[in-house]
Image 1 (tube, one colour):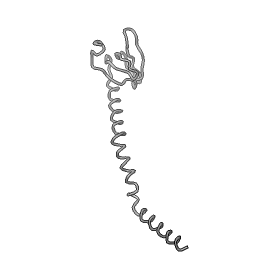
Image 2 (cartoon, one colour):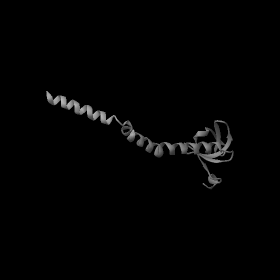
Image 3 (cartoon, helix red, strand yellow):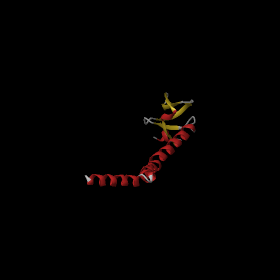
Image 4 (tube, one colour):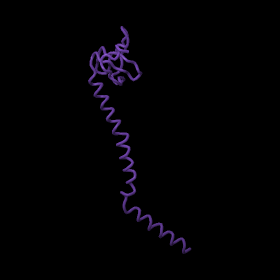
Length: 111
């Protein structure tokens, strides 16, 4: 019976020492969040900002590529939609967010 009492005191003493500094127990979690922020969250926010800037700068006559891979020339711009001519006389209306890339001028004529 004396063995159980000494074990109980030893466990209580070990638990009290670990709870004395809670920052040490959260340090790996804080470091992991820092790594995720700089390697995943921050670059994604940067790409989203660049995409918003590109979409806001669209103008009539720009040659663009959509998220579906369709290339065409911007014919009309609206608040949320853009009309893109993908072939002579063939126009499609897309959401502005579907535009993934603005091509250099003259790219579509050369291909």
